[in-house]
Amino acid sequence: MAQLWGGRFTKETDKLVYNFNASISFDQKFYKQDIMGSRAHVKMLAKQGILTEEERDQILEGLDGILKDVENGTLEITSEYEDIHSFVEANLIDRIGDPGKKLHTGRSRNDQVALDMKLYVRDEIDEIDGELKELLTELLSLMSDNVETYMPGFTHLQKAQPVTLAHHIGAYFEMFRRDRERMADIRKRMNLCPLGAGALAGTTYPLDREYTARLLGFDGPTRNSMDSVSDRDYVIELLSALSTIMMHLSRFSEEIILWNSNEYGFVEIDDAYSTGSSIMPQKKNPDIAELLRGKTGRVYGALMSILTIMKGIPLAYNKDMQEDKELTFDAIDTVKGCLRLFAGMISTMEFRKEVMEASAKKGFTNATDAADYLVNHGVPFRDAHGIVGRLVLLCIDRGISLDELPLEEYQKISPVFEEDIYDAVSMKTCVEKRETYGAPGPDVMKKVIAVNREYLEKN
Ligand code: ARG
Image 1 (cartoon, rainbow, N blue to C red):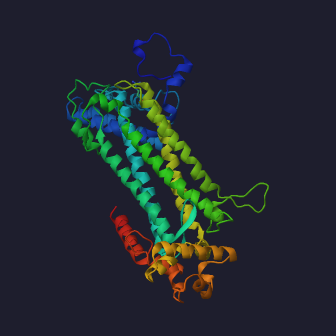
Image 2 (tube, rainbow, N blue to C red; image 1 turned 30 degrees about the vertical axis):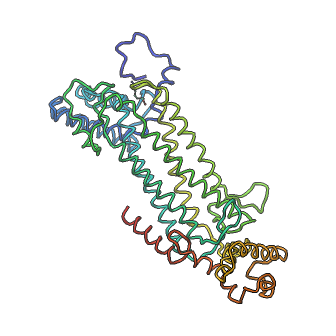
Image 3 (cartoon, helix red, strand yellow; image 1 turned 45 degrees about the vertical axis):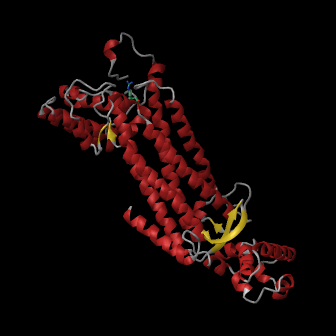
């Protein structure tokens, strides 16, 4: 049990207490960030004349050696240390002796852990952004390929009006684009450096916090030392944004599960992304989409946990905050894994275009267009609505779609109908006429695709 704070104590910590209190099993995840922070701190101490240049160089060399040895596997991070900060400091002292004991000058583990967590979250935001961008690129390519793939658009899970696959996928493009924007917002707001806040009240050493902040890629130092060590707002914001990403993935997964069912048959998930049943030989299950939907729960759980952890904490640092880590790490790893799997699943999935189009016709998604046809021939909309309602009933009775109903039948119900009604209710015409910006019409869809492409090129 290697502790940094033994001096004031006359008894060993109880073993259970030690284990309960220790964080090394999970905070070892940010050994790199911890060493980076120490490097910047030491450079600043030397610049301010608090350490000599020689001491600085010895410490930097020692820290680099620890990093290298951890990464090549010769130095193991073990539970013998309370946390990652103790591990690095103890190893530094082992390596370089006395100068190592000066590393922690003007610093507390409170500002140190606040820094490590921020550096970690910032790196992960960049990674998640990269995954989101890959997914958007995949969605855009599916959109470009499916401007004329007709399918039913739904409201209340009832077939409503015809759309295209490009349009449907385009809705998710917007969601995941907003997710990227949220990531960027969080990154910008959190990008102030807490190092130098000390335990809570700053330090009596002449630290140059601007300098450390700049070395670590921050926009500047935090403005209040008590807030610096007790702020986890950015974790809450991140987990909220991650929850939103999962909600989007879950909605899309739910649709894919429906589309992949025998009843819909709109898509077939690739064998590589499906699983079988141990008893039913015919089964090919969408387990991956289901797991993506299910894992949403643990990310929401992380958000609820951190909100609850933070709600009763008096200023400034309290140990409750150590609980921010495992759930954040888990949520980040879950979201990254899910984004990757989801992109793989949709890029290998087969879309059954004929089934989609047939489903749109069978569901009378062109009924509004048939009514509009009458309106364009002078029939008041309310009457047109009634006429088409009767036509739909007739078709349901015969098990056919509007484009299969003979012209005489149309004309029996309204003499206004002519041969051109078939063109008016074709999926192609129904979609082509929807040309308001944001609608599925092919010309306007191509414009939006170009806008999306430009966005991905620039961001
Ligand atoms: N392991 C602690 C955490 O994760 C580091 C800070 C410890 N500070 C303290 N005063 N006990 O929050």
